[in-house]
Image 1 (cartoon, helix red, strand yellow):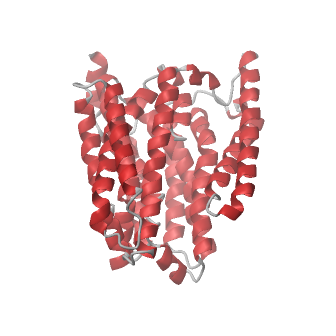
Image 2 (tube, helix red, strand yellow):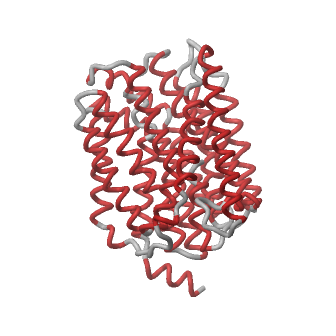
Length: 406
């Protein structure tokens, strides 16, 4: 009870700041999906070049996420977050002012990717270090919901700005939020570093970063049957590197030395099953907000704004039920609520799988997108709380590094 009282004294500004940061990072992964045609024209480039830029952003963030999580132990959670925000702000400025594809690649894919890799783990650890008890559960739920809504609302915001203004305004909106976060960063609690840079095993960094990079690149290249053999080979190489990484971490732990990441956390049933559940649902969300805009624009001829409106039911369902899930979890067991959400999302995905044809209208996909949003809204915030609460406070950063990979 005392812990909850202390959380109330701290206030909710820290949650607002980190939630806004998670929102723009999630937004960044989807809001340009509806602007590919405009990007090609404005930057005098090709569709394949834009697809590469989008892919490199995902690769940069994914491959550096573990390192970003570890850096908060070296420089402190708040400092890692602010350094990431500053890099992200520079990147979004460069992206907004881009005059060619190379400039967009540097600003969006590389600088914003690096900034996001530093910020994202810190957002989780700042929340778990600032709030306790019921306040922590509420904060994690809101943070997870805001990030998920950011990904879901991305096509709508991107479509609106692209159609009526310019895609550059999307990056400008992100810059405004970054400035707001930096300006009020004094409201975030300071956390002292817990380790030195020399304590990080450099070989483990290389193994994990390249392993994740090559594995994810293999997955992202599965877009044409002729590339499948090459893609599978890349995925295999990535898996081999990650196995070597696992064995090295196991050896380091056996010598009672500091591991790059504590692989023993996978023995925690709640963490492992919760992370697997989140991975499946996040894949469903990512697939929907990528496939639907491409289909609606290329097949039905919808403009960017109309495409964003078509995905609005998913966003509304996700937001409403994500906010309601914390209350519902007081009446229904969280595990049952996750199962219900999972089944509803599965039903929505199953319905959508039959709607892709030349005669499809936007109204045809509304039931499926709404069900998908409701299911994800019910389950995602609760899985986030289960995963991040399955560790003691001294092991939170390790759990967050893996949690944020999914």
